Image (cartoon, rainbow, N blue to C red; front, side, top):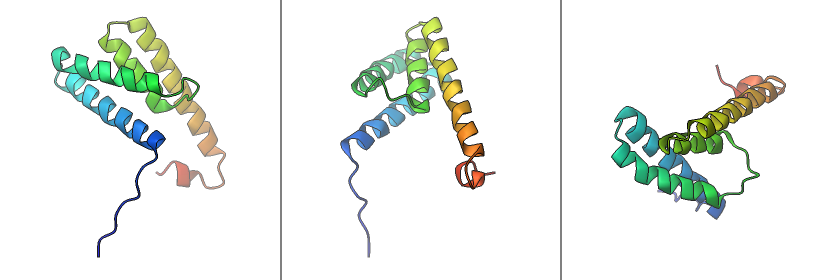
Length: 108
């Protein structure tokens, strides 16, 4: 007997697309160091990011914007996004340390 996965909400589907494009961009820009292949992915990722609400500050969103801006040679913008990504990571860590069972949030 096989079970079918539940369909994703449109919002969840959008974030999955962002995550997929982000990892493809990481591969082509950093691993392969191929800017010609990375640029179209960066443009797609930029379009996807602009479609999600700007008031949704997420670690993925900030990291993805940082990478897009780096591909566009906007290093100051990329640094600002990366700093915000780190700030969000620290905030998540602080929250997890106050949780009733911190290992449930932060295994290890």
